Amino acid sequence: MGYPEEVLAPDEQLILHRHPHWKMLFWPVVTLIVATALAGFLGGLAWRNAEETTRSILLVVILVVWLAILGWRCVAPVISWKSTHFIVTDRRVLIRQGVVTHTGIDIPMSRISSVQFRHGLFDRLLGTGTLIIGSSSDEPLEYDDIPQVQQVHSLLYRQVFEQSQGNGDPRWDDRGRPGAPSGGYR
Image (cartoon, rainbow, N blue to C red; front, side):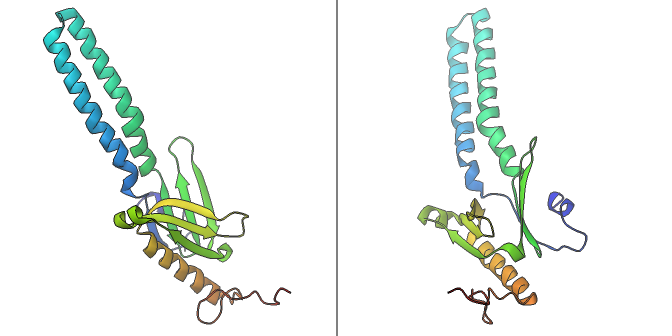
């Protein structure tokens, strides 16, 4: 897997490594097909109806515009998809993004207070959704287009529960359900 192993501590175990769901690539593929068909059609028109010098110029312009569209609307999203990593280890959740400018966030399992998921009908059909991780930060962190979000949710919940049980974390009761903090609030 290469990349995730580079960010792990020596005795940390990789549990899950995912890229965003392939649905992120739907519009780039549609753009590729439409742009290629349109460039082919315009190239054919230029070939049949233009004079030799004008034809060459038009074909070069069509090629340059086609390449620019593919770079902007197809290649860039594929690189973005490939360089986005959602990683779960036995100690933390890591999100890494970027090629030129890298961004990342690490959430220790001990800081996670809740794990939720959300997906509509279309997302359920595709097997994707949004994972919502509540931690010690003010706002819950939402990660869109997580493949098999229900399984990831369950896996992450088990990891948080196992770590909290191992640490004697009072936020969880003996059946693995969120419990009241010790000392209680009045």
